[in-house]
Image 1 (cartoon, rainbow, N blue to C red):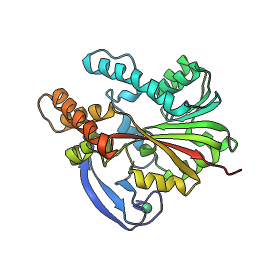
Image 2: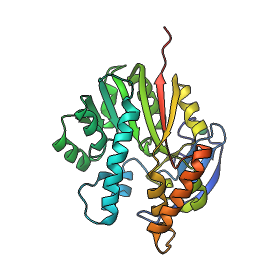
Image 3: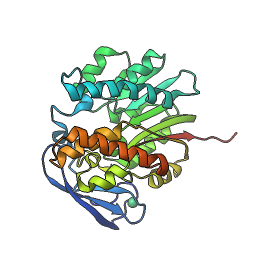
Length: 294
Ligand SMILES: [Zn+2]
């Protein structure tokens, strides 16, 4: 079993948190902190051919569509507000070009970019999600390995919305980002933030640890440093403010509290209030650019 840091390869680590897969299997995991580069990573890491089993659930919303009921309805409404915000973050100040969305799911984001005139390519490992995405848009849908066949400097924009935390081979993925983005192109990365108030409050029951689906856990300093080593400069930070509510609601469910919706809403609200001062939102969006000097 490989227990080295997925970024720097160091075996020098400490265990920060013991937790379990609250969402699906109830299996035990722990989170290690690399004492050399500062990255947090999930241990033990499921083998590549076994990880699919941890995603099999009817409740895995990101690959679902058209669900009835109160929570899914709120989820759909928030998703639509989020989509507009995400599109703006990814494209503000740019002319149309070619966009890559890694981990595109059923294609919600990519579809909206396509409607705005972007040429789109999506990467998605789930065949079920790809089949749904294929029905609704023209975008070419590929697998992660296919990225290696795409020429250098192809994309104006690359997005990963809550995806980098799932990536098994972090070094390979960052290398591909660096290689595929055009000079002065933009890379947008959305991630859960374990430095947020809701993470500190729920501790091992914080739903956005989501082990073992989340293999890597980032903070602002570590991610910025990782990208900087590849010539990718942080140009903007933003947030997905609704995630604090959703993550808190899920965390309340894992805590077996009564009225998880009410409690989760309250805790999400407190988290967002605190984040206005600290900048440590429950979900952060990092905007990087590959700066090229003339
Ligand atoms: Zn490391």
